[in-house]
Image 1 (cartoon, one colour):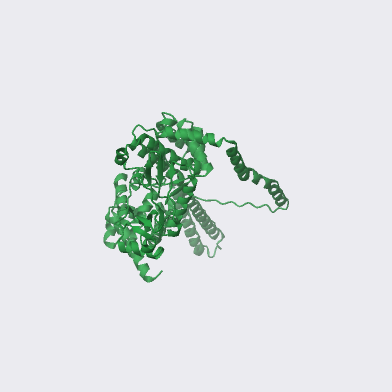
Image 2 (cartoon, one colour; image 1 turned 90 degrees about the horizontal axis):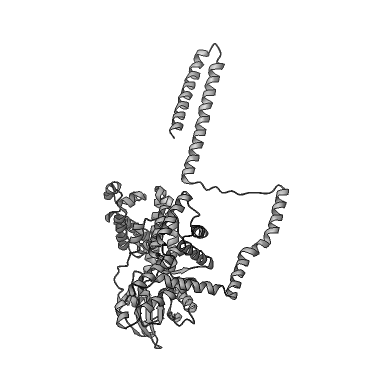
Amino acid sequence: MGLKQQYRNIRRRQQIVGVLIKNGLGYVVQRFGLTGLAPVASRRDVMSSRKEAHYLMAEKLRITMEELGPTFIKLGQVLSTRPDLLPPAYIEQMERLQDKVPAMSYEEIIQQLIKELGHPDDIFEEFNWQPLAAASIGQVHRARLKSGERVIVKVQRPGIERQVENDLQILLTLARFSERRSNEAKRLNIVAMIEDYAKMFLRELDYAREARSTEIVYNNFTGDDRVIIPRVYWEYTTGKILTEEYIEGVKLNDIEEIKRRGWDVRKISRLGTETFLSQIVFHGFFQADPHPGNIIIVNENQICFIDFGEIGTLTETRLMNIGELILGISKQDMERAMSALQSMGILDRLKHNPEDFLEDFSDVVLNVSSGGLGKLDMNRLRKDIMTLAYNYQLKLPAYLTSLMKALITVEGVGKKLDPSYDFMETASELANKVYKERLKPENVYKYLNRRYYRDIKPLGALPHDLHEIIKATSRGNLQFTMNVDLSEKSHHKMAQLVSRLSSSLIITGGLIGSSLIVHGSHPDIIEQYSVFGVAGFALAGIGLLIFLISSMKS
């Protein structure tokens, strides 16, 4: 990194801290050990900042994220899936984050097209320079290829990748600085969190990756006439340009146009729910952040999904665990629901009393499942689980939070189209269909085959492993490796214990040494040495007294 870039990064770092202070988040700067990076004139204000109500600070944080640009907007959206880190008020505000950016200029668009594909006049018969949609990372345009096909072209903003990479590097620097100065930052392990976020965001900047995801979903729905997925034009797609088939239709959030065309809104609600849930239960590969603008109604019987920049994946095991959790909650079967949470790894780091958690979780289950599976309140279930996760510092798997968010979005749109529509009724019917499908002989065989390779085949090595252990034991070569991971509190106690042990040895040595001097002094020189002996004895006694008092206090 050159000196010029280093200077820019320092200025950007100061800007980030400055915007936090300007928007009334001095308490956050102070709490996370960033006061030393604040402008000198602002440090007194930072030090005197006090914590405010969650809803006020959460709104200020959202405004700050939007002001700082795409890297921070995306970070906020990621944080909205981390109820173990943020209280519910913050989660709600982070979910409301929106891009507020002007559209790219003609010069910027043409520069990017020429750099990635060649001159647009050689590729497109028509190109609409007015964007269909614009965001902080890129924007979408309609066009027609020389061969006649109508397409949409997603163009990444020039220089955005470098800007994001610089911001991510600055965020990592701030996180490391914070962890060295703040116990709160160290407890939250924010360096690891930012590192994970950086990997995820940089993947999303790769439009070729989005194209591959689109193609996977396209292949998954081959043969299902209800679902249309745009075809990818690979010859006009790169890491910064994505060209896909243009699908004519009405966006799912344009309810007035849907009703104007006389389409059956109940039928469309059911179609949207069934086809989206099919992504999850049949393919385990789904839009992690669906919103009405990314779902197009072609007609009453056909729906189109677009924009697969964010993808959620569910293995067979994950899907079964989620099914067990939902069934356990709907039937108020606490053992079943708790077993599902355990299988997901959610309870692995439970630091509180398990009985307290079980009691609070039981309250959640009773509140959301009073009407059985068909009446399960998904929105309330998500909010209550998020609150529970925050209270008990539980990390929910990313696939679970993105799935719950996606389901609630689809349910919400269905309710807007038809307020009487029952999302869970359709979901229950589909779940029964899935269970029947899995009971077919070919699917049972696939399941048993997977379990054989995962659980049974490894047992073949057991006799050999036991033989090796017995051999090592008989030779006296058996070794055990033990890793003890002490918490910060345990580490402090251990250091305190070692310190006291050292002090007690020194004091004991002083007492014994002084006693020997007094006792062993020659009569001719007793007056000379007894003074040192008595003085040493007195000092050791005072030290012993201080040591005993401090031990009792702690």
